[in-house]
Image 1: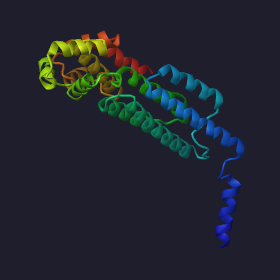
Image 2: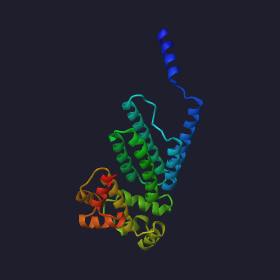
Image 3: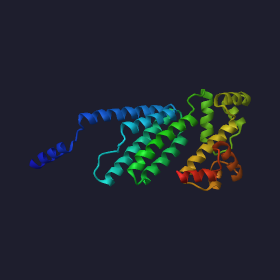
Length: 253
C-alpha cells in the first residue's frame, strides 16, 4: 500500500497532467493540425506552408515529447510522424488521390521516418515535407472534380497504369463512342488520354526513385515503357529534367 502511495506521489511530482499554460498550447497545436489536414485534403500546399510557418513561430522550441533520454525522445518523435503520415494519407484519400499513389507515398515516408537519427531532422525537415508532399499529391492526382464517367476511366487507367490500354477499349466499356470520351476527358483533365497516362506514369516513377530505386531501365519497364530512352524523353517532358538528374536531386536534399 505504501509503495502505491509513493508511486502516486512520484507521478504528481513529475506533472502527469499538464498545467494551464500547456493546456492552451496543446489546444492550439491540435487546432493547427486540423487546419493542416484540411489544407492537405483540398490540395493547397501554399496554405500548408503558411500553417507550417505559424507552427514554427508559435512553437520555436517544439519537440515531439518531453523525454529525458535521447533514445526515447527519438522514438517518441518517430511515433508522432508515423501518425502524421497516416493522417495525411487519409486526408489525401478524401481529397481524391488514388490508392496507388498513396501507397507509394506512405511507404516512402514510413522508411524515411524509421531511418531518421535526429529529432531535429524529424521535426524541422520531415514533418513539413510530409504535409507538403501529400497536399501536392492531391493537387496533382485528385479526381474529385471529375464527372462520374471520367472518374471511372481515370480509376481504370490508374489501376492498369503499367499496361497498354487502348482507347477503343474504354469506349466499349462505357458503351460510348470514343470521340465523345476523348473530348470529355480532355475538357475535364486538360489533356488527352495518352498524355494523362504518361503524366501519371512519370508521377509514379518519381515516387519509385524517391523510394530508393535507381535503375532507370527497371523503372521504365515496370511502368510499361518498352524503351528506356523513350521513357527518359517523356520523363524530361513532364518532370523538367532527366531521370538521372532527378535521382541526383534526391541525393542532394
